[in-house]
Length: 233
Length: 262
Image (cartoon, rainbow over all chains, first blue to last red; front, side, top):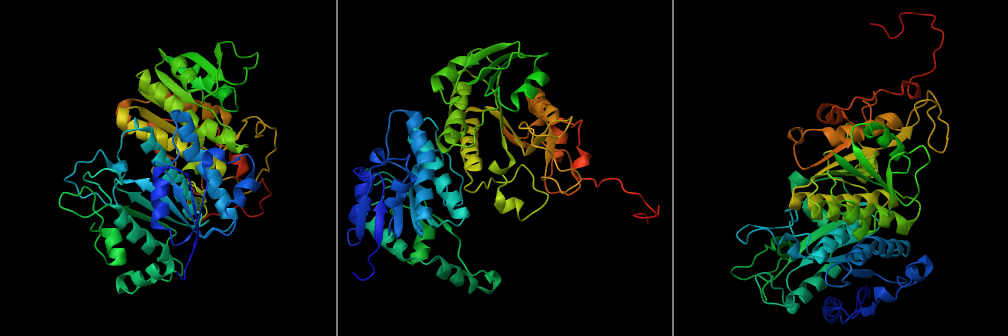
């Protein structure tokens, strides 16, 4: 493989982290376990981002704790610390991994896409935390510290109506590694109605991903159009 | 009516107590003891102590959150983000239907708005950016939003900017003011800031368009950077001090009394 990237994945040993590692096995991968990091030292935090091209921040099903305050702390403050360190080390892109379950309260007949506002039960602390983690990542993108792809994934473990197969995840995640925000902006500008003088693309891209099948809950047209492919399992 | 005040011995607390003490039963909480001038009930409590806040909120009708710590990264998130989680859990568990939250203007209108536009209003989607104080408060506000939507809790958020003492226009640290220069986009007297909390406690539910409403606590100012009409209309807040000295030039002798006419 020619274009090997140096990729750092959070929440080492979590099921989610392992799945992403399998998808990206042809790249140079490194990991960290946030429970073993010294967050009081910005130097040691920054060190883990040395020479990293892409950071995959698992914001859902990564860090776990029974204490809701500890959960919120990781998904807000410590996420902020990690992203701050990534920015200092000039990491150019971050994948924020979140969940389609953030839309769980919508009925299945609705055409839920990236345009919809989230609607979930705050009784599920892991969903509240995924939402907060997304928002931390979004503000770093807004401030153009780096590009963020916020990927809300379907169920990777159970075959329900939001099921996402590993092969589909792998195809799309490899495509996402190659996506060029600036090129995407130029493509949009080819339509005369959307022509603009912008020279850079958006720094925030929100995408939903699950398998396509009859009865799938969440629409995935945006990512399919992006790569001109079908998200079939 | 019984009101629980969180973080009440800071800068804004004394003025909120002044505005509320004669009409309401107050339980003041903070990690710091109140000064001897305070005569009411006090409980030592940190806003991120989930169980403690839930317990303190028992029997209360309203929670007012004034807690803020800005200068340390951990404390900022403990107070502004986790603190709001404690507060909203306390409201939910104790069936409290009104919460008054406070914060800085830029938890909503960060640099991506303020440096670009005018007529900014408090109903815009938040854009805090990555400034520590703004983002930690913003995340707390997002927790409020989700709890408000799900449990029907009215959350009234009051957004402040620059606050000054009405006597000498100094900050709480006695930082002096430069008169007659271009001012911080909105500046409000402490007395009026406290009054805004009373207005939020008292505003009728019928006047609130949704369960989650935000307000800029600012006098209407000639530069029109921020629009606080909603605060006047809905909360019925009228600042007694408009602090004109900050944005009017010093009086100079006029040789021509037609200047600025026609």
